[in-house]
Length: 345
Ligand SMILES: *Cc1c(COP(=O)(O)O)cnc(C)c1O
Image (cartoon, rainbow, N blue to C red):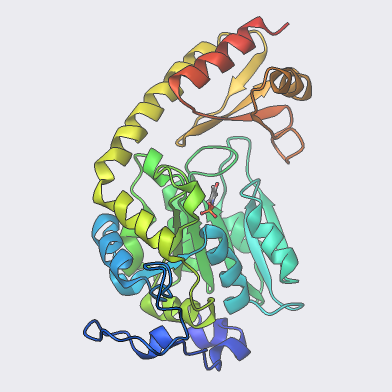
């Protein structure tokens, strides 16, 4: 791996960050707060939230098996994705490499930041080869984007190939594990100490059932995390979100129950839908959704919309021609989808 100084955008490396009131005093013993121009009434939301989310990170470290200094929290994973560009790429000259197809935000953020995005097509089984990915890199490639289990394909990427990229690439390798709670493969989050150039993304939006609170996580070396902390908005995770997340973390077994139930439902849906004449293929999945090839994606999508059932039409995505992406819902929602598909003609 190149040094972090070489990888970091030069103005970010030398940046003196904004110092907020809650940064300058972060102790727990004071009881008169006249430092931040807040209104003393309307507790508890009259106060600025903890800029480094200390309590929340302490709980998360415990649940996720990482150290507090290895955690960044943001307004969804999307904040971490954008920060990676703003911290580690120079607009107009650097580039990033990514598997294709994958999650759309990696490219949107590249475009917003005026950074060249180099997609490398997956194979027929939606797998990638480290060689092909590394061959797309040059001296200005700062980031490689991997997503496992991948969206919209649903499958895990081969672990050995990811490990090769981590060992051989000189820049940062992002492994987006938004769906890893649904997979039985060992998450890369647990191997942070082995790879100085890894950034693992997790989210509260999927298995944790909290898409509405907007809370995303990045796990990486403490040096990488400090650069994120320097660049992020001072109070990027609001008080209500921190409170809700702390509540959710008190009961991680609830998440385990949801995951079990959703995986059972996923099998039931797949077993029913694969028998229908409209279904040409259902691809292997390690997520709470599956990708299915049908005989006429647009017509089936429109038919379902008319019945008030919304799935994701992925037919215009490369390698996903004719495909719909279907999220596993409640038993009743899934039954409605299955019976609608049965009646399609
Ligand atoms: C849903 C999803 C996320 C989550 O994004 P948030 O901003 O945390 O809601 C991240 N990565 C992938 C691949 C996803 O599908």
